[in-house]
Image (cartoon, rainbow, N blue to C red; front, side, top):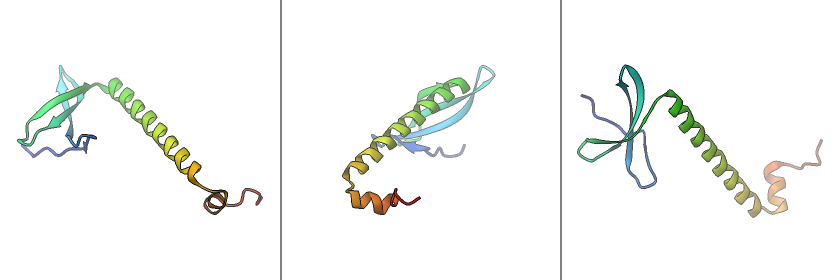
Amino acid sequence: MSELQPIFYDVERRPVVAKVIDREGTNVLALELLAEDGTTTRLLTLNKFDSKQLSAACDRYVHQQQSIDYANVNTLLTEVDRVELLGDEDDE
C-alpha cells in the first residue's frame, strides 16, 4: 500500500489526508488525521452533497478573510499610497 501524504496541515500543524472510499456502494470522501506511525483517525465522512456544503463554507471563509485583509491594508494606506497603487481615479 502506498504511503499516505497529507493534503494540508491544519492551524495546529496536524496532517490531514483525504481519501475517496466506498461506503455501502457509494463513493464518499474521508478526511482523516495522519499520525506519525502512518495510522489515521477519521475526522469527517462526506458524500457529494456534504462536500459541496463544506466547499461553500470554505469559500465563504476565504472571501471573508480576504475582505478583512483588504480592509486592513486599505486603512493603512495614505492617499498618496492609494493613488500609486490604484492609479489616479480622475483619469478617464
